[in-house]
Image (cartoon, rainbow over all chains, first blue to last red; front, side):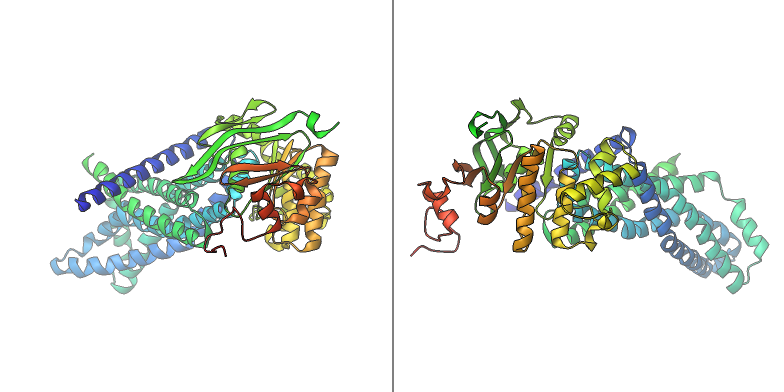
Length: 257
Length: 262
């Protein structure tokens, strides 16, 4: 009996949280498209979220590309399929690994920082102070972050794609003695625009998820230093899980069409 | 003009607010007249902060209403709420300065984002407001973290008055400051009322501050106002709760958790 009660209780809490997140999202998105706009905030966040994430995303991409070549080579050389390695690498990176790994890295770097910053503002009453100065905190804090993160993620993933392919190319040609021209032509021949575009669309969705998770967790911080920590954890967990979940959904959509 | 003849600036009618099962405001009625300086007293956790935050609609009341100049300002739309806020000034307990922005941007924040003034105008206005609270223009470009506690409070004060508010709220303005800085802040609160004609509502525990700034004192206990009166009547109130509080006695009608009466 108790088990059923608990299940019901948790289900209600879960559903009400889902509802809160959705309402929060709608509020944030609505603020992006209605005045007043805070351009300076958007610009600040574009630089903070986008530009400063390039190193971390680049590092992730180059090693992923490199390792991908080694691992596929192990398998494919067993049935003389080495010539397909460039294609496998480019498809894996553009369709899947680029967006997902960049998304997870940005979730760790940016999602956590957004959550910690907003939670600190909440705890130190700065959010209330915004309201007393007739500035809507959703407009001023949330909308610019959602906009910046959603716009900048596809650009980051584009960079990750290029660097990832480069990483693979370097290992393949320098270590495994692939023919350089052949590797490049095999990389491009079977690549279709849809492969890259689907990855970039995913990236935009992930960017949206990261910003919303960070802002939502920050806004729901209670009191004290501990709640800032909790908000940060929540932001990273929530965005990572939602990224992986939405990744499956979007892949499924692109897969069937 | 005597205080009693002035019109009522702000009024709360039957204000109620609970958090879960904890009743914080239990049908609270309060009247503040124009250009009055009301000080709200009450024990820790008695709901003083909740009261002023409910008045400025940072916290939504469960029921009851707040009247400003006779107009009901409860449950407004977010746009009307923003307009209402422009008539209020609010000093937060910890200052609540935006630590990512320099001092001038903090002070002129309301004007920058609502009146769309330029940066140079904003700096000029910030300098004027800083002068009012006794700080020089050398702090304009500093960040809040670079200021001492007393300076932060004064910058926060300058921000609270930047929109020339009609009613200013002070949430424990002198807590955590040295005795001299307490007087400086108390003097400033008096100045806002006398020179700028603002109505002030202050929460404090500090009896020196009370006698310095108050024209009227109200005591909140268990979600209700249990006593109001002028500063002169404070020590002959004949109200047991109020008497115990201002004299700091452990025995009396206010029960302190974990302390048993002899």
